[in-house]
Image 1 (cartoon, rainbow, N blue to C red):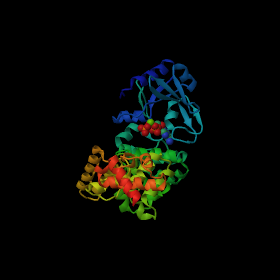
Image 2 (image 1 turned 120 degrees about the vertical axis):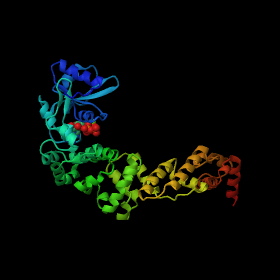
Image 3 (image 1 turned 90 degrees about the vertical axis):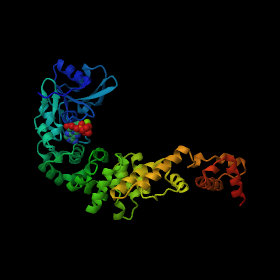
Image 4 (image 1 turned 60 degrees about the horizontal axis):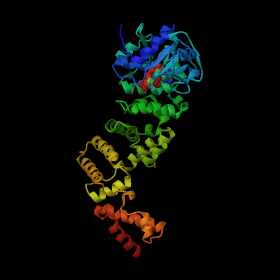
Amino acid sequence: MVRIALPKDVKHIIDVLMENGYEAYAVGGCVRDSILGREPGDWDITTSALPMQVKGLFRRTVDTGIQHGTVTVMLGRNGYEVTTYRIDGKYEDSRHPESVEFTPKLEEDLKRRDFTINAMAYNDEHGIVDIFDGVGDLQRKIIRCVGNAHDRFDEDALRILRAVRFSAQLGFGIEENTARAAKGLAVNLKRISSERIHTEFNKMLKSPHPDYFSVADAIGIMEIVLPEYHVMSAEDKAFVGALARECACQLPERYAAMLFMSGRYSEEDPADTAKRVLKRLKLDNDTINTASMLLRFGMLEITDDEPRIRHIIYETGDKNILRILDFRAAYEKCIGNDIADVRRMYDICNMIFERGDCVSLKNLAITGKELIAMGVPAGRQMGEILNSLLMLVLDNPQLNDREQLSKEALKILNS
Ligand code: ATP
Ligand code: MG
């Protein structure tokens, strides 16, 4: 019998439930990942016990989704989701269908799950419970629906995107019937919430195959959820795929890569396209702004002129330049260029930061208050003077000294 090394807490929860006459198993992603020798993200437990019965057996529990059968059991600082065997109604998000029905049969619970590789349960007493040949599909490296693929995708269109996401994470192919059914129903993704969609996209983009938006495209997903990508030529799609593989494994970089060529297909600046698209997908502001920033400045001039570089640092803000140059290096690699120049500029930026050269108003050696004390009126003129002083200092960092700058301020004021 194949054994999975259950974490101590998981084993404890399963043991307590079983000692009290209930069935209990680790289930889903953790079983799949354990068989594959991957570190499971979290351990979910499925049980025949009803939520109130689970709550009665453990000292600390949280009602995470009690109406859907899920109770979180707290052991120390860790929480484990324990969910009663259930049959699902229609899904509203990936974990919470609109209505559920509890069932005493493990098989029913496994049947409601999306893919064979996600529909296995395990405990030390029974070993792996694998009704749909999930183990075989793990060996064959394929994503296959539990039951009739068309029906399963019709119940919950998000599963179409999940199929691609798992295929990207695991490097698996999508079984023929499953792929065909997905293609036929991809249009239903229109009705799926942006949050559910971006959760799957994010996982795909951070996987070993961040370029699998091409697989999503072939299935018809991109046409529905990201037409800005879908309209591109095959050549541009191949290029942005390569860029996604080459750039850093972070969401802003990968979304920026995906939309890198979008400027060729609309009047809009790609940085604005990214803002619009990622807002529509309801991503967080940091991801939206960073992706947009990478596209806005990605093609900036590469130079080894220090004063010019300080101006660029000021324009791009804070330490954004380092991230931009990293992204730029990925781009240059993709078009087959040498990246020595980009690297040199990167090193100069680092040197400028280490030396502490003034590259922003807040590091200027003179403040607005001090200018007021010198008789500069607050308001527009003050702003202009501060800005002129900053430009001067970006050119000559040694001028960033209070006395020198007051002299310069007076010069400007009297000119
Ligand atoms: P991850 O490692 O990304 O967490 P996972 O397999 O644990 O992968 P989850 O989204 O956490 O995926 O879902 C846990 C389990 O719940 C899945 O393994 C699957 O059995 C089931 N499941 C999740 N979403 C669906 C869905 N939309 N339809 C059917 N079953 C689902
Ligand atoms: Mg999970």
